[in-house]
Amino acid sequence: MNSLAPRSDFPLLAANPGLHYLDSAATSQKPRSVIDAIVRFYETTNANPHRGAYTLSVQATDAYHNARVRIARFFGVVDPATLIFTRGTTDSINLVAGSYGRSTVRAGDEIVITAMEHHANFVPWQQLALEKKARLRIVELEADGTLELDRFRETLSGRTRIVAFSHVSNALGTVNAVREIAALARAAGAVSVCDGAQSAPHMRVDFPALGVDFYAFSGHKMCGPMGSGGLIGRRDLLEAMPPYQTGGDMIEFVRDSDTTWNVLPHKFEAGTPSAADAVGLAAACDYLDALGMDAVAAHEKTLLRLAYERLAAMDDVTIYGPVPEKRSGALSFTMTDVHPHDLATILDGEGVCIRAGHHCAQPLMRRLGVPATARASFYLYNDEADIEAMVRGMEKARKLFAGAPAPSVGEIAGASAS
Ligand code: 7TS
Image (cartoon, rainbow, N blue to C red):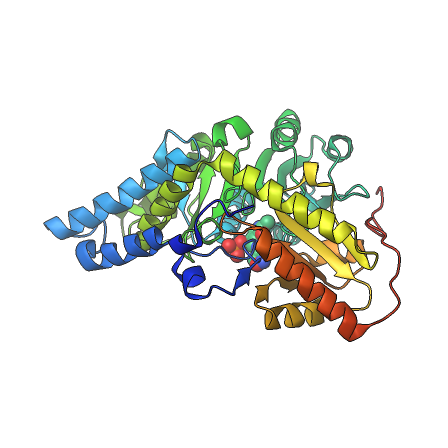
């Protein structure tokens, strides 16, 4: 099978025909149209938005505003002021924890997260709970790396203020039942925060249909520039929230003794914005929509199935996470006699880029009972040849480390019901 998007659209891939890039869950490659949009902004439109009365500054302001409208449309958001530009998912979740969380959570309240969270959706809540003397409750996973709604039902209570969970796990690939989890949170009187870092790039995301109160995403994983991303939130919540950072642009009046805040989205965008990156991210949305997000998801699923079958047939490979039907295009695994870092190094020698490590999910790795896994992740420029190159590299690694193959376990060790 071919790639969905031609490699020639991606200058880095076009310049390196032997490169098999299987680390898009970390960051995606960038299409020429996105790079061009950024260059064009700096060459034709560069001025500080919102500041000058002169034509060029107005053009920069318009470009920044139009980018917001375009990206909002990508997520089915009709009120673009409810899309706050941030530096990415980490920044967005810290915004919610630092503003909504800090102003609403009290001692004895509960914050619910899950055992599969990336540190970006774990540590801010843990630290908020410590600061507020609130209780952090962790919903555990099933043996196949999925989340059961009943565990949320058991964990949520009248004390729950926030339920934060990923749409798609970066380490397991599990796709979670966002709508249902959000509904349970609402029924408990809590707000829901969805980490969309691994869903926005890979599937159609309609924010209103998800039913969550906040949705965080990273531009750099969806063909956009590094340092771009956003937070989409419910207008009434965003309006009631105090600012996250203070400074220029986010104010209405500054008196000697106090300050009033600008309207949305500016209240949450202190300082000079990354306007060129917003413009680049809007171009990424154009690129993805031209391919069609359903086609992107279908392409990744085909690649995932293929890779899953190839790896499942290896006796010395353990795959983590659920069956392909319940997951997105990330595949975590270990080889019995080859440490993930050694495997990544050998694969690198074959031009294959995979991730090895804890994937910023140490609490999950502890539950899996491994310090690290290898992870291959797929995107629209990948094809069967990338998977075959990885399989060849794994065979080479096996020969180099030649040990006795052990049976595949395929289950999460240590996952408990508590
Ligand atoms: N949440 C999830 C589920 C992620 O996968 C990541 C990044 C983040 C949050 C943080 O996003 P950032 O853009 O703010 O850094 N995940 C990964 C990864 O899996 N490998 O490198 C980065």
